[in-house]
Image (cartoon, rainbow, N blue to C red; front, top):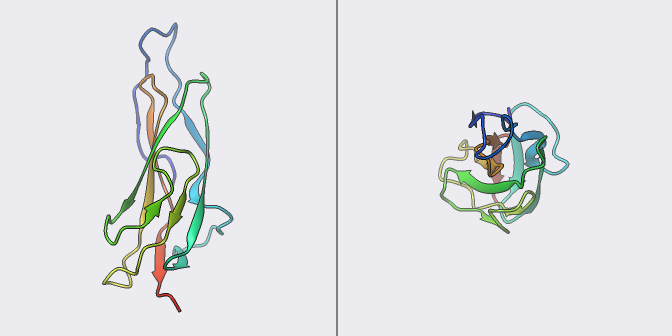
Length: 126
């Protein structure tokens, strides 16, 4: 579920083909179970995200986190680090609407991949 897109096979100036970075864990809320049907969190909960990436070439890795749908917006502590926190937004108008968190991982030499979290459903604050 975590590798959706892989582009770029060679890097500029490298002696051989660039190896894609590989997601070895995540992206998902840290400690969340692998259950069918998605995960449920109360609005306002701050979630630590888990993501582990390896790059065989030991290239520097760059990250870009986004959420879908974009509104209502949750808040990332940073969109450019491997393991930010994400504050759960208010519930969407449709309570069956799931959020997904995406992370674009780049190795700086043409290797790009996209990871996707499990579905996240928002529970109204009690």
